[in-house]
Amino acid sequence: MTMPTPQCPHRMQVHSLRQETPDVWTLNLICPDFYPYQPGQYALVSIGGDAETLRAYTLSSTPGLSPFITLTVRRIADGIGSGWLTHQVKPGDYLWLSPAQGEFTCPQPGADAYLMLAAGCGVTPIIAMTRWLLVHRPASDIAVIYAVRSPRDIIFAEEWHRLAAAHPRLQLILLAEDDASGAILSGRLNQAVLGQVADLAARTVMICGPAPYMRHAQTLLSELNVPAQQIHLERFQPEAASTPLGGTLRILSCSHPGDYRAAVGSTLLSAMEQNRLPVQAACRAGVCGSCKTRILRGDYQAGSTQTLTPEEIAQGYVLACCCQLNGDVELA
Image (cartoon, rainbow, N blue to C red; front, side, top):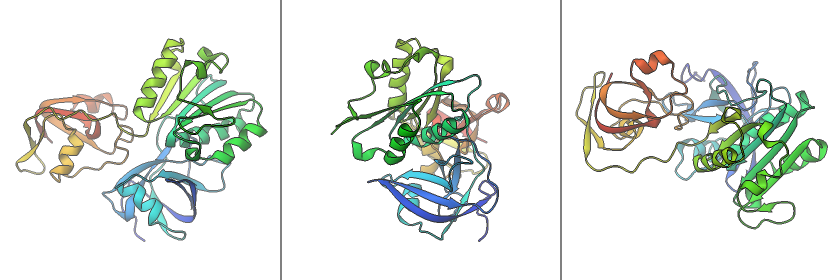
């Protein structure tokens, strides 16, 4: 099997799949070579062995502790990547992964007390880091608050209970919006729940989940006087796209001449995909950097720049998934 793209040089065989919840599966992968990664990082996956279709998924395993390299994937309706991984890939198949990427990891410098906040599938990097800290930093004070819609949506439910039972220093709080019972609290993240965590303002906080959840968590933490520099975020989905403002804009491309049009207010990524201009997009959340595109001139507003260097920003590079088009633009 030929490597589909230099971006994904690591060939791994699927050992098995395990269903975690009604819509989440974990793929256990065997890598024949050493694959360095840190807990909480993610990798790009070539979907169907296609060089142009890449998607970003967290490595939910923990280096040195987990028997396999694992990807835990929520199946999204009409999701090209998640649909293929959860319903077409089978044991014995091969996947191509990129080197591990991302800075949402541990240990954080100088941290000996953590608050881990997760919602939904955002728990995947959180459990990878929690495992690592419990073994390699056994004196660390770790609190985990994990929010889901209902108890059946708790990913790694059995493992969470085993970890909490085996490690008294781990404080585990589970929240469910619906059908909560027993030790699972009812409702959403709020100040009262956060108030159950001792020395909150002294903790390093790691947050992963949908954008509205993370904004809400940041607001609560700010109200409780947690310093902003102690808060670290990982985004699994982009901020909600702006509603098109009405009207049509023109896109010029030096490398692919043609007359391209898009709605004012759309993202550069959606405009390029609609016009079939070449662009790679994996995470679609301004994290992986695969959709980096250079704009020579035009009316636009860039969002996330976390994977771009100051030199690239000065040259007009943007992340297409986080760039809103307000008027005509010219691409390199």
